[in-house]
Every structure is written in structure tokens, then in C-alpha cells.
Length: 268
Image (cartoon, rainbow, N blue to C red; front, side):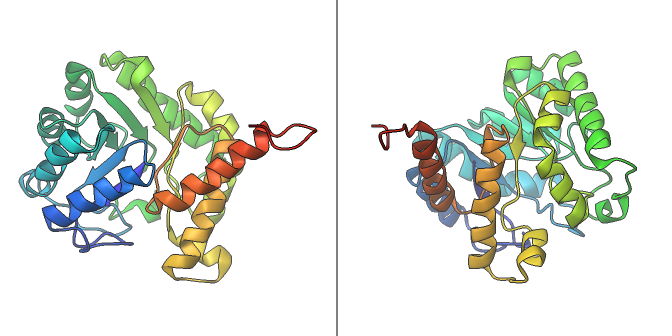
């Protein structure tokens, strides 16, 4: 899942693609690099980020979503917590709603998704982007994230979202410490078993990777992202959300080649 941030303040690439034309070109480049889905967002969810009203968020993302849905030849996702923005994005051609609140921010969200017959990614987060880092208090982070995420999945199904179109994201970096992020990554199979739907994971360029490597630059974070990408797929994830699509795609192609190798050498 390739990331297109149509925002001035996202932690990695804020401002680079705030112009609709630049964002469209970037999304098409991600598709050409091998993305399976393009995820378009108009509101930063970095720690401490200020909220954006629905009208401004829609103004940012709708032209980009419409163009990519028409030209990219892969599904387009809208990254939003607002039902109003989700509805407009689905009308513009989006096929997936990626909701970092897991349906908790806007009570109308699940009905909008169900009514459109869209796919839905329910992510785990406590609080809001502005407050979430103060919410990273768990007795057992793996069990609690799994239980809370399963509750979001159950609520989506109860609202009419097709179980076959549901995905769950444990929310790496959202109300979690670096140590808790690692616990969750190690326990992805347990979380997948608990939530009962395919997992989507997003580690791309997040600050805990820089802390682990003691190297805080884009190249270092991309290298670390590739390592976690391989880990996530080996642990059962079906989608990873990344900035550097080409690097992750190459790593996964190599992983696939290794897994298909036989005693006599590399399989065709």
C-alpha cells in the first residue's frame, strides 16, 4: 500500500505533495513501482498533529482520488476518520476506507462504508493523534490491542460491513511506545488470530525505527522499514503501508524466491 500524503505537516513528506498535480504524479509513480493499493490522506496523524476540518480535508484529497481511481488501475484508499470525507471519497472512486480510529472517531463512518459496499481497514488507536502518546498504558499490550481491535471488527460487522472486505491494523506507533511496537510486531500471528481478519501493518519511516538504529534520516528509516516489511509478511500480514514501494517490493520478491527455492536451486 503506497502512501500519498496530501498534507503540509505529515512527519515524513509533509508539503511535498500538497499540490494535487504533484500528489497525482506521485500516486501514479507508486502504482508503477508495484503498489497494490494507493492510500491518499489529507490530514496528518503524526503524534501531536492538529485536526483538519472535513471541508479542507476533502478539498485536498478528492481531486487526487478521482484522478488516481481513473488512471492508476489499482484500488485507491482514503485515509480518513470522517464519514463525510469517506462518503465523498467513495463517490469519487475510492474503494477502501483506511480509518486510524477504527470507527471510534465518527459514529457515522461504519454505516457509510457498509452502504457503499467498500473495503474497510480498522486500526487500533487510543485517544487522538494529539493525545495518543499519553495513552500508551497497557498491562499486556498484545492482549489489549488484540481485544480492542477485535471489538472494532465486531462493531464493523454489526454495522453491515462485509467481513470479507474487512482488515485490521494494530496501529504501530499509535498510542504505543517503541518497546510496545516491538512486542506487537513479534506477536502479529497472535493478534491476527484474535481479530479474525487479515492484517495490515504500517511501520514506514516511523520514529521508533530511527531510535532502534540510532540513525535518523530517510535512507536509514527506509532500510529499517524494509526489514519490518519482510518480518510482517513472514508473520502473516497481507498488506504493508509504505512510502518506498519499490524497495519493499524488491525485498518481497526476494523473499518469495527464497520460499520457492528447492534443494536443487532456485525454483523457476
